[in-house]
Image (cartoon, rainbow, N blue to C red; front, side, top):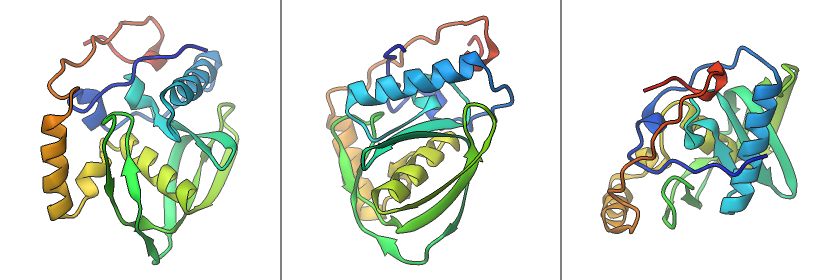
Length: 182
């Protein structure tokens, strides 16, 4: 397990739709282990592969004492009931904003072995699963803010100490799971 650098807002990988996972092997298991380790090191409750610079549809979570992951997630149905709550993101460190999300969601996908997995979540787990799946679609939580909150968020982002930093260089790996050379 390796703690990897988390990509910050401005890195193009965060705005790219991630590729489906088609190979369930040791490299995928290593990626999930690195996601968990990096998530824990950063103090997060979820982390998606694009946040580590890997454009694959996989995320991890640690909610209510349960650590898990989901590969190739598909969300729905969502509850009609919405919940308000503060939401933050490890790719926008130190910032959080109020965001409404569906209170409950069902997510289906696979584990690292390719076996089917279903997650039925409410509250924080629902929020986390939706947030991390958004990352896999190139969507950040700030994209879902109401206009007034988004205006405040953009001001806070411009003032953040990490804003304007160059994205980290993408490392080239011989294994297709770890991205493409750019």
